[in-house]
Length: 601
Image (cartoon, rainbow, N blue to C red; front, side, top):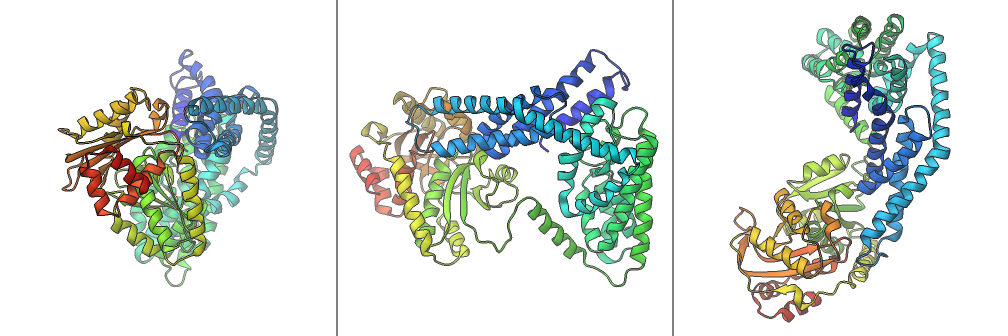
């Protein structure tokens, strides 16, 4: 799905410049073959790897996909859907196996070589084994589809496709089954009917028009606007509740779908590339020269048949169904189809997330973890970068300016926003809402804290990392100073400092309670030489945000690749519970006192 734009670009280039296109151009037409052979499968493999294994998974997924591309003679869209996630899973499993076992300073070496070696092995496997298997599967599918075509039975696919769409499997069917088959056929024939089996907007429009004329109540009133969104906006999901509130209308969409497919088979209709979203505008844009009459008639005919059948069924209906109830049913099925859990299922893990998964989310997670443990809840609290949020996450907490990114990364999770990662009231209300005590969580929490402490013990905070009685005119000066100290102490390269400013521009690293934790972006971790922290005290304060309390007296800069910094982060969070300790940390002139208090905390 994220790569549909690339498919549309390929479709336009093909429709315009191939010998039978609108503007035949032999030079530009040279783009068509390499794009379908290399670009599109690589994008699919990259995206599949990223969904499973993050950025490293994306790279390994692309490498693996290259093996299956070279190892076969047909466009490897189906193969890319298989080996891309396989590459992501392999590197994710490797990273999990070595977590906490890599010596500080060797992370870059291990990361780069592991991705290269695993990618190489999987590329060889794809080239020699998987490519042949996928080619055989594709040939079998093509044979089955051709048998339906030759027997004039292709319209019967609507008996399965149309009900499956109502169950929110439309994208899985269209882009998981018909698009790979269609692209292969389109590359050979210049168009494919498969792009219109699911994407035809006619049946849905027929249902909505029937409601406009013969519906009742809110369904009749809303059908007009819904038809515009469906037909011109391409959002087919909007008509699903109208079918669910009267399940007999599935017969209408099946009849309409079969009519559309039959019309295209009869008249030779088809598209050059997937029409996504399924808007009439996208459909016409992807229609090749000479096929417009067939495509338009297929849409009109499918709409007319669906309208006639739905009208008869609506007239025969007794009573009035609830559109709101049907919409609720659609939302429930949509959540299930995307792997979401029931609202009644107990939350087992909470993710506190920020851009880099370092200072902000680490301190927020540490504070929430304490409260969860104190309440005895059987819930694990973990901090991660937004890009590393697992797809099965159920509850995610982020800064309000990052929530949109987190929702895009994990759309099925419940997302909570805050403005201050040290907001005690927010965490107290959340813990209270989550429920009762559980002794099992206490054991898990102790084990979790022990693991963090064990890994963090390798990090020694010394007096050279503590800077007291500083002054800065603004936060830029404070961040620059802290970054320079990280570089001088050998924790990071000079290029890490600009990344700290970039991170600050995205979302302020001010946490509240007089503390800021500037650090680099997630992409700047390669500029970290070894994990390190500098503790900077500004008794007069430095303004980090425009809010009234947005003044930091402690600026704690972090350079980290793994989790060694979490012990210090946890210590600072613990210190927040004691006003006397915080007062000393913000006013003391003795670096050793800072070290002593943090170690004690």
